[in-house]
Image 1 (cartoon, rainbow, N blue to C red):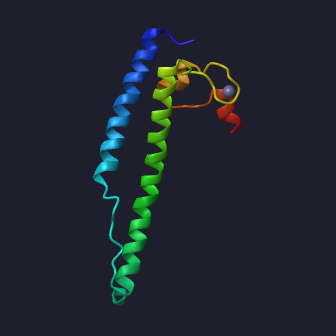
Image 2 (image 1 turned 180 degrees about the horizontal axis):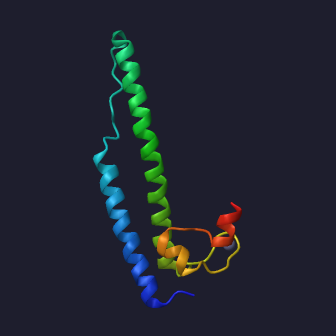
Image 3 (image 1 turned 45 degrees about the vertical axis):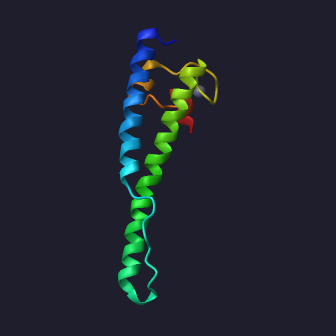
Length: 111
Ligand SMILES: [Zn+2]
């Protein structure tokens, strides 16, 4: 079980991480213009490829942000720190490295 102090520290970590990520995502323009002019040829293809790369990074960060939101939600509900797979408490060792972790060490190893 987590102590109150540990939980408060983790919540702080999560909140900070969320702010950094949300700030980053907000700075990336979600309405990137693919270009309407079909004449551009190769140049457009390069642009699309570059955009896909950006999207790839975006996706990972977005998912991480969702995990963080999810963890903060669990803190509010009082279910934080429990493995979503087996229901066992997640050790502080795991949470201190990855506060948004949904799984305990055992389930993580099996996943
Ligand atoms: Zn588990």
